[in-house]
Length: 146
Image (cartoon, rainbow, N blue to C red; front, side, top):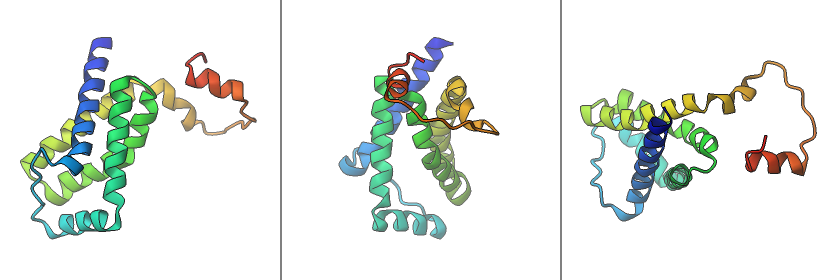
C-alpha cells in the first residue's frame, strides 16, 4: 500500500507540475473548448488573471507532492481547483479527452486524500475546543512530532 501511495503522489506531482508549467512554456498543445460556456469560463479566468494563480497553485502543489512535504496541505490546496476542473471537463466540455484528463487528476488526488484521512479528520469535529496555539505546537506539527 505504501508503494501505491508513493506512485500516486509522484504521478500527481508530475501531472500538476507539467500542467502548471505548460501555461508558460506551451510544450503540451491545448485545444480550446468548443462549448460556449466553457469558453466563457476560461476567458474569465484568463482575463481576470486568476488562471495564473491557478497555475501557480498547481506548480506549488506539484513540487510539494514530489518533495513529499506538506502532502495533506497540498492536496487540500488543490481540492477547489480539482472540483472546478472536474466540472468544466466533465459537465461543460464532456469529451472523451477531457474525461480522461479529469480522471488523471481526480482519481490520484482523492485516493491520496483518503490515504491521508487521519490528517483531515480533526477539521470535521462537530464541536471544537479552541485553545491558543503555541510556537512549540506549530514546530511539532511541521516537524511531524505530534
